[in-house]
Image (tube, rainbow, N blue to C red):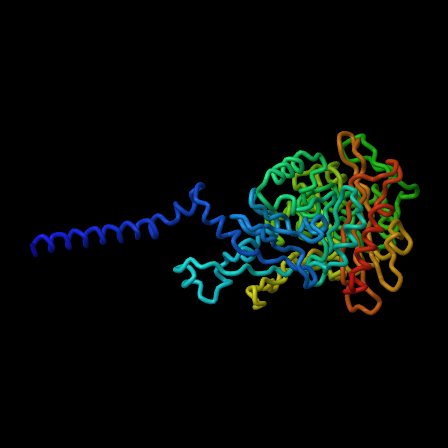
Length: 489
């Protein structure tokens, strides 16, 4: 009898060992395949089983979480969703995440091991940390001013702090409410289909992920290249520029919107935005130096992130002289995001230095302890400090007595450059109205804000579409909001 008991005990022990081996195989060696299996809903249940961390603007959250009482318990909510959508993106149970909700998902969802005091212990216990918060660089008043300024018209606004690269406003219009995509019911699917069908592309971030011909705003870059290369030494010396200007190697004649541009000095040509002067300047500077200056400002950079990716602004490096002339006035293949053009204005304001823009100031744990900060940012010298000082003078005159008077702010020094960019087959499209600028309060040590505005669909007749008339007032409102400082809303 004892022998049979002993055999049974050994057999049970073998079964126990086999069970433990199988459990180890499943839980250790096959954990990843089971976790990644589409049929496994446990990760989703755990992911949405607690509130998501928040995205903060001006110390206040613009996101939240709603308890649905369902299996996927918490859904994302948004305050002023359309206004902040180009920054937050969406967090959807059905369609994933985008923009900050995507790049900072580890912090917001609680999955980032940096949120835990003992990350190795959490890995062992598979415990989930509370979601952390993401503190943005946005200025709430500037964001609101940009959004209201566009007033639903198709276009975008980007504003940065020149001395640091902090993104102060990032607005795209038309926009959408990310809350419409948060859940997983039939209404979410209908909203997704409607937004993707919309010809106006409301989910497109036009401020950071859409490029446009920058038109005459690119003349800031061309002027910088001409001054740095020594092609222009005196701002008031005649430039020997014919009007009209025949593009090199062609019979095509380039003209101006205004009269009297022939042989104008750089000062006057910049003030009145003479195409002929700047086209010839670009040719005189040459492809190599024009390309070098454009790239120093940030054009042709494929790796810009803020932290989500930014579309590449481009300046063609393989141009003949006629193409170079057109590229030097922001036409032909020259393309730029509004954020890139805000960087151009910011470089002028900051002594020729280009600061890499960033949108996240810091991330914090649920209790408020800092997890990470933006830290120091790369700096690139786009032009000589003396060149930047002369361009500040030229841009200031555009606002005080040129085409950008609608951007003037009492009690502040404002520099700007207008632009009206042609596009489409044979330039048949409605021109884009551009304005780039910077502003410094009379009591400020240095400029506090640089802005770029583009309006795609002017609601006036084609001949009346101008950067000074349509885009400059929006830029002024954004600059005023930053110069005024924080206030209750």
